[in-house]
Amino acid sequence: MCGCKIDSANKADSNVDKQKNEGSINSKESIIITNPLAQRLKWHYELYRRIKLLPWWIKYNIGIAETAVLKRNILKLASDIGFQDRWTAALLQHAVSEFSKKGLGADYYGYHNIQHELEAAYFSLIAAYAYYIHDLGFDQQDLIYLFVAALFHDYDPLKHFDKPHEDSVEAFVRDDKQIKKYLDDVGINIDIVFVLIQRTAYPFRDKIAEHANMRIEELFTLAGISENDSKTREHYKHLGWFLSVSERIAGYALGDIEHGRDLARRNAHALGWHPSRINEESVRYFSIMKEEKEMMRSVLEYVPEKYKKNFFDNIQSFKDAWEEENSIRASIRKNETNLVPILIEKCDSSIDLNVRESVLNIYRELPLPVPPIYENKFKKSLSNSNTILITLRVNDNDGEIVGYVKGGPLETYELRRGTHDSNLGKRNTAYMEWIGIKSGYWGEAGGHLLRSEFLKEARNRGYEYVTSYVHRLVITNRKKRGEPIEIVQKYDPDRLDYYRVDLKKLTDATTITDPDPRIIETLPFDLGIH
Image 1 (cartoon, helix red, strand yellow):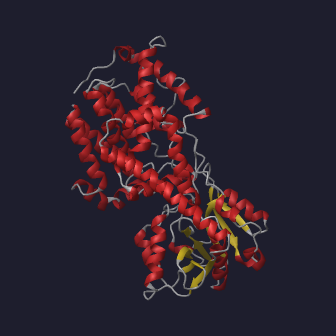
Image 2: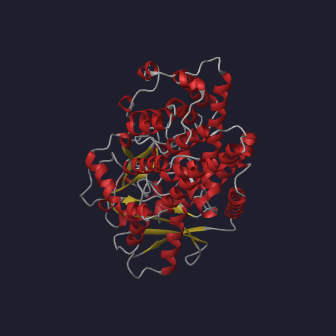
Image 3: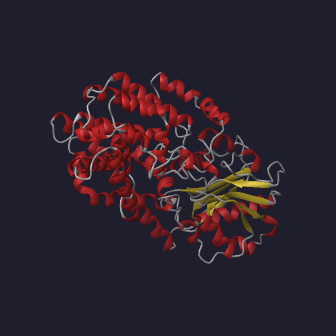
């Protein structure tokens, strides 16, 4: 494996190392914590996460977990390129371990998890491999930089929202002495790694690009690459752009349409897409890539045809789904289709199989809620007599189920870290899970109908309060309409707050009357594009 550096990078010496933090990103101790989710994890919580992940670790180590398959593929390709096998395996193991025990592993509900890092690392190497073997501008060292940057470009354990911040990533990677050792072993300059990571900031324009470019110039200086060496600086900027496009394409190229849909649902958390906008925003997401068509062409130029096909099939599937949504919405707005909320009187082992499967299928189409409710627990709740379940049907009581809302006693739910409800244990509060509606039916007052029926049923069952999580703007709108609602715990910057509705003060008029119920469902979740 090549251990040499580009000559201009050799100018970095021990004196530069001592000055790393001067005018640059400090260690993670300097990160300002403004969010309960970003509080440092205690050792016993991290231990709990490891125990919880034990079944996955067993599957991973015997090679049947999806991440284990990716790991095997990366090891083979890296060996073909000429990476040291033991070094590659050790670095991969460290990445998987650190992401998992910091809560960004296989059990993490968001988009920027270890699966994404491995996909980005693998696809970046696939895309760059032909450029290396045919000597088309990338050498072996470039591929090492791509690999390391891709593997850790989202390493932000204390991030304030799903999408990490590149400055925080830099702070955490610098603080990890093991990563630094791996880089030193192969003669890699850590500051160049951060140049590539900074270039993955998205969208790369306006203030985001301005900040990233400023930091990139500082990193070049720290790496010992002079301002006069424009050729070397431009080379690494180009390499960073190559990584940026590769990591955004990776999952959609490596997986089929169903995998692409899962990525889009997870990406909804990262980019702030409300469920009604996932297909539309996915189409826009891919359309915006045309602005980088030069680099897209470079990235896709030499990848295997099956990956190109996956990528373009995914793009087309989102276009088709968006067109179908528009057709359904037009039908509703012309009153050709009506939405009817139906209360399922009793949830137990005898629940109608069609209801059970329809609700489960909708649940699987949606992003996991915050905090996540995993499928096994979701299934069990459908057979629990304490569960409140309202379905949304087309036209009449026997129509197709196109939505639902579900909930139950607060005591049976795990709240978001940092949420403390004083009513916990008093059995006077019903927790309402996220509303689930099939693609095409969002944004047409269905969510309002489901929520209104849930509040009424909770009151009928003797509950005094209903709590849940929703965007702060939604809470503000409801308060303006006179709804007795209060924020119990704020979360900044994502503003996905925990709120409480006082059912004792709720009137039928407040529950049902809404001059424009679509406002509730079409407010975008601003989950944190920095």
